[in-house]
Image 1 (tube, rainbow, N blue to C red):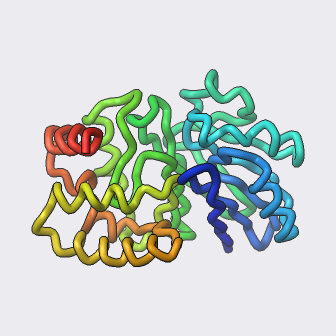
Image 2: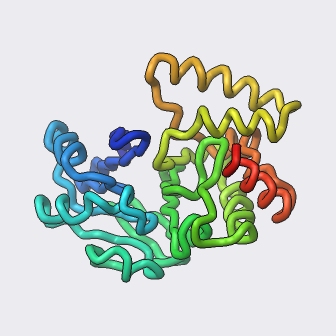
Image 3: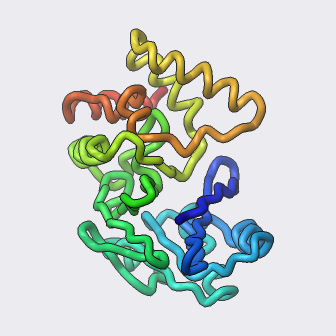
Length: 240
């Protein structure tokens, strides 16, 4: 029921434009900026009715006000970060649900990158919007949280069905993969994936969305067996 469009903005951000075919509602996930998003929706004849924010960082909320002013859309985001996202209309946290037409998303708490970071999981569509928590072969930096929180996030996300498509917010796959090769040099799945990533990036193709199954096989942070191992890998990646 959903059509999901990737809009590249800034240097490496992706904004996701999501259209529900029955209600004709259109939603934006984490708009860093407004103009390319408004233009894409206009070109498709879609009216933006909602914005969903995963966390407060400006490269995820910077387009909120202008899109809201242009469309009158309703903005939903993390309750724990309401003071840092002044455009929010509705605040949610883990266990809540949000709707786009008849499509229901479960809100999951995934703190660590920011203290109140959330993700939106849509089981009926095998989709999850994860902001900066999970990347292809990577995870978000621990700006406001702990290795323990990120380890719990990775374990939680790894339990989702393998076919779940993961819509993250940055094109970090090549750099993440370069570190993954060092973290797990004997992992053939990582080597195979990097061959595909390098080929895609050489011709300017995106490497996301990814899937939970692919991350289970190739993501050194999801594959970490303990909090300590994740912490060591995060520190190593930060200095890689």
